[in-house]
Image (cartoon, rainbow, N blue to C red; front, side, top):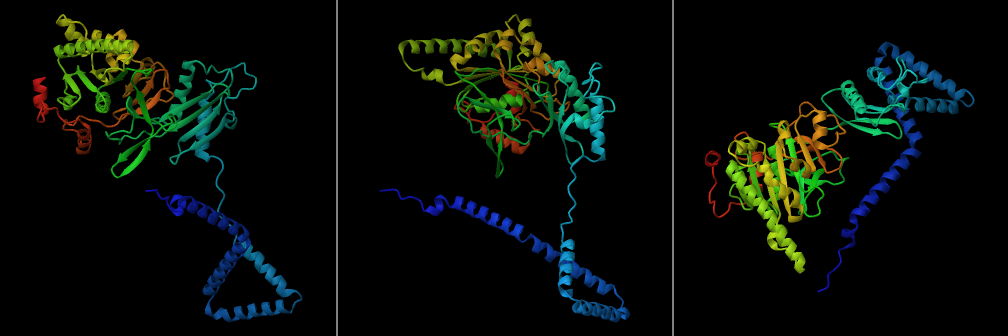
Length: 518
């Protein structure tokens, strides 16, 4: 049966409707331009008539007769004078055009008095840093004009600086991080604390653009993201930093939000991830979000060093190999992971030698999630065992070829306890929570282009994938569904993403019983 083509009105009806609206809008604008004098005169006549009625209503009744006689005399004189009616009509039209003119005051083009004071104060504060005594014509000088240094500026509704483009002299060492940090700290303090600023240095043009960044959305709940196999959404960032958006559901609504996507697999340049943060910053939330996404296509092994039961909701789920909290279980699980990595490497090597495709048991990704490995260091040393991090050398070195991904989460204060292999092979980094600029630079390998805040919401931080730029990051809310402090909406969202229970575990295990068993 031949397929009939759609009617023409269905195929290009939208385009015709848009074109018709544009033609109608153009015709209306043209008619307004042509009839503008007539519209102005008509509006002026209406205003004159209204003024006449108000004048007549304000005139006392005993004086209305003489007023009418005076008006009739004027009309009679105008009618008898040569060219009187014509001159009267011209005068009336001129008065109507004057009264009907647009009286909207022009918008202010420059800053007001308070804004001028802010700019002058900011200019004076930059003088000691952007001037030199031997400069014959300094761009920044005490008592100078800020208009020469500030190319453009914008203010928000609250009267605070929203964007600033300034020039600086060519001898300023803009290539030194210390010099840049001093200027950025000064601009942050003078422009208003409590906000995040983005600094774009143009070293060729000797210009600096300061932009106030909007807060990242914190109401993004856990949900199924539209990604391909091998892609993991770490969180969400600014629209100007990435060239991709994801459709996210907010009840009955949808929004497109720019994500920070981490790619894993055989062709990944950053196959392993290191997450650092302070307590309560959302590190476990990010690891839990990664686990829920990894369970779509692979198997997950969870080792928790904190012993708080943050991942008990994964126990007994399809695809979850184990959730270990004790030292013995952690050592056994990591030793198995190292042997499994070696087995996959041997199987893949034999398959390539024989010219066969990779075996099915080597294609499914294996995820090793290790939370707070530093907690096992003291216990392992006291009991005469080796550090569990030593068992991660094989998965870290050969995990990309064996389709094994390692995610390590550690507190920022205990980052020194991480082994050299972990530091060397985890080139994808995430830092959550408040942190000093020096801590961010040491953890990420590069300073962020924004000013970190002292108080941030949970799940807020920075991410850097390999040698890429440092991006702001907001982790989607993925709390522990067994926690009493979790809201019902977030609990249902996380439970909806969990895989079903395995056949071995037939019923839900309460949190208290799970922690007691562990």
